[in-house]
Image (cartoon, rainbow, N blue to C red; front, top):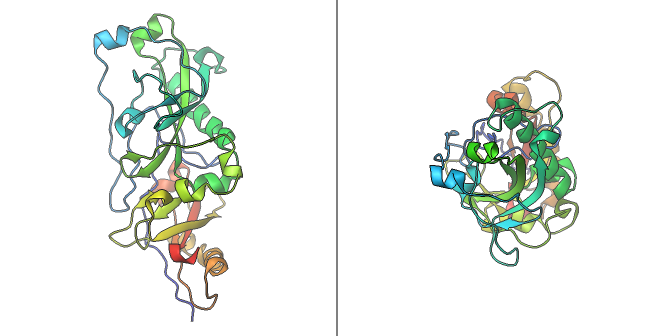
Length: 292
């Protein structure tokens, strides 16, 4: 027989500035406020704004960042709108890699103060697009990965001194509140084989159960994300509709990787109305990791 299971509504992938959505064409609308990405379905996003740098730190000379530089950032440092963390060797342990360094003045029609919503919104829209191009691969690969874009701009004092750069980095989440060290060549990674074992989206338990949380597949996890189900339209179709859209695609995806095509399990995670409004227009199909 076919054992099937439909996941309850999750709030796990609520993404805002600094940790943006995986989707190229369905990116969350940019925001000027930074919050955490919540990996647990039972939790809700909470604001976590980094402390304002001290005056001495704000006045410290900061050279224009270098493209493709590596950094050893903590999760909290990755959420900060500014950074004083120096670059480190890419041959050593690091958790962030710069994929682009731009000039604020080059953002068409977005000239203004570095902390203005106009500039911050432009940077927040540009960096996710550049990460998608940098990592390569199809849209679905990005959605099924734990990669996220983050970005930094100068402090107000540095901007007044003439600094006008913005820096786009890529990080990968290990789980809630933790980054996974980056390894190897990331450019074009999602267009190659083998990336899922380290950077893929996995779950700690059956989706929808109390022990379920999103983690990188490097952590193991009893369930793995298999594929995504696009949901068309500009208006939220309603919970009944979105939760049934995954029946056919998720059954097929789980059957394709199951040892026994007549006896298998699958799960489906659909977007809530809040997630839909934030730009997430797809569901995720899941199956036990042993099926892969």
